Length: 77
Image 1 (cartoon, rainbow, N blue to C red):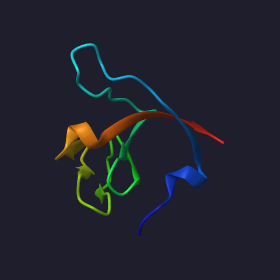
Image 2: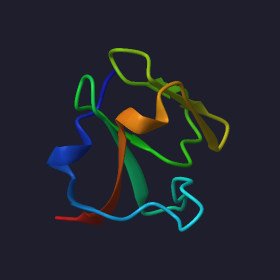
Image 3: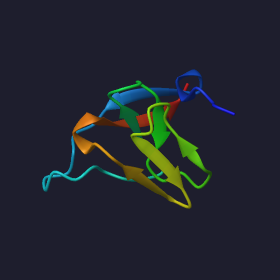
Image 4: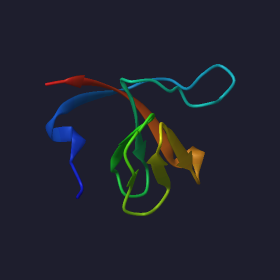
């Protein structure tokens, strides 16, 4: 079952870390540049975006193409 997180949260883009890595945290999400779906950066449930670029579960997310990912900060609406 897919949940559209945009119906629950407002998202704002945030910069990557100074070393070029993507930030992580409870309020940090990743938007896939290919399919435009949003996935939590620390997903504890099994989740993936439609194109398979973001695959998460167990508190981690595997990113196949980091250059196609935009980090976002999510706040409840």
